[in-house]
Amino acid sequence: MIKNWTKEEILEVYNAPLMELIYRAAEVHKQHHKVGEVQVSSLLSIKTGGCPEDCAYCPQAARYHTEVKVQKLMSVDEINTAADNAKAGGASRMCLGAAWREVRDNRDFDKVLDMVRTINSKGMEVCATLGMVTEEQAKKLADAGLYAYNHNLDTSEENYENIISTRTYDDRLKTLGNVRKAGLTVCSGGIIGMGETAEDRVGMLYTLSLLRPQPESVPINALVAVEGTPLEDQPPVPIWDMVRMIATTRIVIPTTAVRLSAGRLSMSMEGQALCFMAGANSIFAGDKLLTTPNPRYNQDMQMFEILGLKPKKAYADVRKTITIE
Image (cartoon, rainbow, N blue to C red; front, side, top):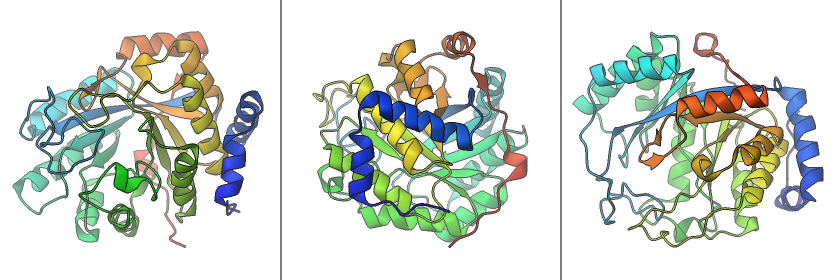
């Protein structure tokens, strides 16, 4: 039975004394997941820069003056090699990101479908984040073997217009609906450290908790402030905020994979250990997350050995049956 949370209840969880919050989240995690098992994912930018959107956090927006160089869509052969390297490094999921506002029915999309087929044939889960998609496009991705589609809400509905003006919150939710209708699993989360309030963080989780089915994956990102973007002067996110957000996510959406995402490079191993204790059970590995730095595979494997964690195997060949309520 899925609990119908109110914003007030979620805020109460979020504001609980930190040690009590971690303990509660750890108990929920043990009920729904294998303790010590963490999915390792690889995130690759297959088309970089030149995006027409104005997301305040993103160095790939064409209107901002950052060091990101515009690069055309990668080839299927390049993706094949990248997937082999990711799998050899312990990744069981490969995520493909393109700096597009929306998917267009053209040769580039056909190439992406070939990329999905190529990675899927290696027994890896395939996730994509390509901007807005129609139901028909989502079905084509599903038919090609896509397992999950990522489309983050980023923040609360109330705070959204302070971060992005080139698309609406409803646009985001519509894309998630199209993804669901196509039978894909949903990956949707957000970013903290963008100047939002605790109520905004809770508001985002509240919206995600209302989705039926709830998202199978919720990435929690710490803002990586990039020079040239409107949020370049934002201070680093305290590790305690990340732990608190991950623990709250674990309690509110107990069955989801909580992904400890952007911002890990600035976190100590001790800080990450607290995140795993609080319910994080997925990381992105590899030296880049799209265009921002990330710990290397060997660093993560050393951390796994010290903390007694083990990589989760892919389950793309046993896709869940999704029921839309």
